[in-house]
Amino acid sequence: MKFLQLSLENFRGIKQMDIDFQGADCCIYGSNATGKTTVANAICWLLTGSAITGEKDFSPKTAGAHNLHHKAELYIEKDGGGIVRLSKDFYEKWTKKKGAATAELTGHTTDFAIDGVPQKEKDYIKAVEALCGGSMDMIKIMSVLGYFSETLKADDRRRILLEVCGDVPDGEIMQDERLKALPKFLLMPGTTDQYYGIDDYRAIAVKQRAKLKKELDTLPERIDEQNSSMPEPVDEQALRKELAELQGLRDELIDSDRSAAKKAAIKGLRADMEARKLKHIQEQGKLNEAVNGEVSRMMAERAAKECDLSSIENNIRHGRQKVEEMSRRRQELLEDWQEIVSKKWDDNLAICPCCGQALPADQVEEKRASFLANLDECKARIREEGKKCSDALIQQLKAELELRQGEADNLSKKIDALQDEINKARGRLQVVVPFEETDACKEIAARIEQLTAEAEDAGIVRQQVADTDRRMDEINSQLASIKMAEKIKERIAELEAIQQAKATQLENVEHGLFLCDEFIRIKVAMVTDRINSRFKSISFQLFKEQVNGGIKECCDALIPSPDGTMVEYKAANTAAKINAGLEIISVLGEHYGMNLPVLVDQAESVVSLTGISQQVISLNVSAEYKRLYVKLADKMKRSA
Image (cartoon, rainbow, N blue to C red; front, side):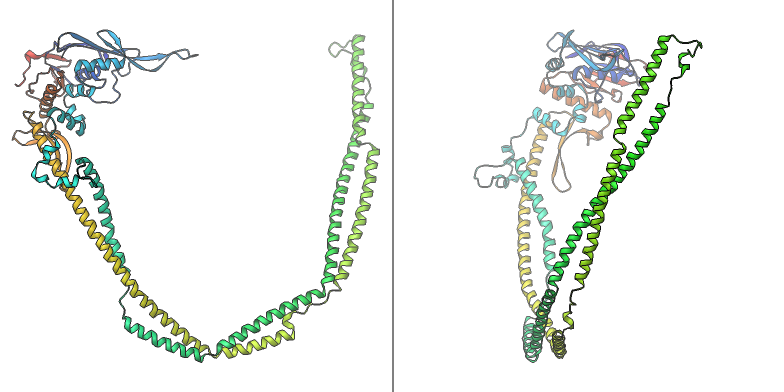
């Protein structure tokens, strides 16, 4: 397919522009900010919905512009003949909300059309993919120079190259003599003819290796812990001999010690003293049992009467407050009554206050009637309120308070009488003699003191026995450490055996991983040769050797430098990158049958472009041209 003509309207600062490609290779010249990249962005936007610059959320809108349609239209000549017109129209969406005076910007929308016929976005995309012969990603790969090497992930680049050049079957790779030991590692446990794939086994082996390394890292520390807990060596024969001698000495000391009988006698005397004391307390308590019961009964009765007295006194206090309130209110009502009855009709009310003339008789009569009615209403109110605080009610309440006061006085006298009875009863209590002052207690205490003094004479013997016991405990502890040391040695031997077994397992796993890496190296070498055979000047590196001897998958283009050495794509100069990109597009286009025009940015860096069958549109920075200038193929140079 070829680009014939591009038309832009209000597109990223370009008010109106038409470019006639005529289906030929062409160069677009212009100084900075003249619209070269905008032209490339417009073509990419029409084909893929994104910009050649890779900016996210690309918008063709001119900054600061409103109420404009931002349009792009591209005429394309199909490989089989015929012309297709792709067009997009991007514009603002203004909405007038209910109750609002003016419309406001609520978003943007894009209209799609093919040959002037409106399309839904998904139908437009399907039609473009059918026109170009591939997916949106493949369209970008085939039309945007550098997209394959700079934007695609390495995994996607590798996948595409394998599609183009073909993969190498694993069975063919396994025939290599270097991999003869690999099948035994790939064999699934418990089977005789089922094998893991290389990637599956490698994933399992990597986990096993990490686990084994982790376990091996902890084993030296665990062995050191056991060694550090190893007790100091001792002479078992000498310790056992000393222990036997100490046991004999202890037996002799025990035989010579007679303090045990004295201690038992002291213990018995103290128990007898406690029993006698308890009995004495019980007997003394019975002496005053009846009197204490009588005192308790009278105190309970006094407490009940004091509670009743408190309740009556509260009632009296509240009653007196009520009498005072009623008397005060009665006096206020009497004063209000005197004020009301003293009020008389004022004849001046029959004279108009404005003109000074006498009011009509009917008005005077109406005012007099209203005055008298108001007096009657006030008197009725005072009488009604007076019923609530009448003198009779006040006197009745005072009489009730006098009765309650009498009850209170009577209760108070009874309480005082009860207190007198309680005091008299307490006077009848007998004096309790403490047990410690009795002759029996003094006699037992003297005997205990005598036996204690006799027992202290045996203190030296007891100290010797204690010293002997302490030394025997030390020897038994040292003898126990011998058994502990034997157990620790057994545990160390067990850990060392585990360490050896784990190291052997790790060595086996790492050998399997080495063979997997060797498989990948052989496969990559074979695949790399197959891939590179499709390209004239560039080649691809599909893996890199790691410092630890492993390999890391990659997919980087290598470009020849002037001295013949191969340079990674990212380190090459712009011209080399551009020609490498053209070669990649040429090979991929031939395989996938896609013949899309190629957009070449920064083309001014290249003296001569690599020749490809696709239409090439190159963008060149040139200070000579202040406006875009298009030069067609008959005036361009391209290498064969």
